[in-house]
Image (cartoon, one colour):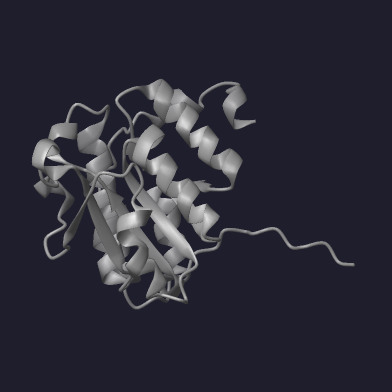
Length: 204
């Protein structure tokens, strides 16, 4: 009997969706928040260009405020939630897309709503691609361990640029030049080098 082929984690625009989790005013104290939001905004801009659907959530917006304007999420209806996962409030969106295969996951906090969302999506049989330069926590330790935990459970860790290039797939893509300009813009330090440098046992 042939062995089952492992999932390679390929992403295609027609079977992907972008999840934007809880980038709200009262979370501005999260480490690298402006940088994380700018990378998520880049993902959203490219998703719109490639006609990839996006969903946006807000955790208890009455207390934690609205989504920050820097994300550029105008036109997206924010789904309020109290659950520490996006999945319960976006279930209809998932069920309405039988072709869906991959979820591109951005937002905060890594050890809370991002982790729980990833686990819920994996439990549904979906591939999860955590955009590591678009996710953070108040604590870098929580961020590091959450990324390792998601990887242990089967999520893929990718950078925003890596995913964008996968989604385009070919320099002959009609929007390649436009997207290339976005990728050439200066990229902020999102604190990842400190997490991955050296012999980090969590990522072996």
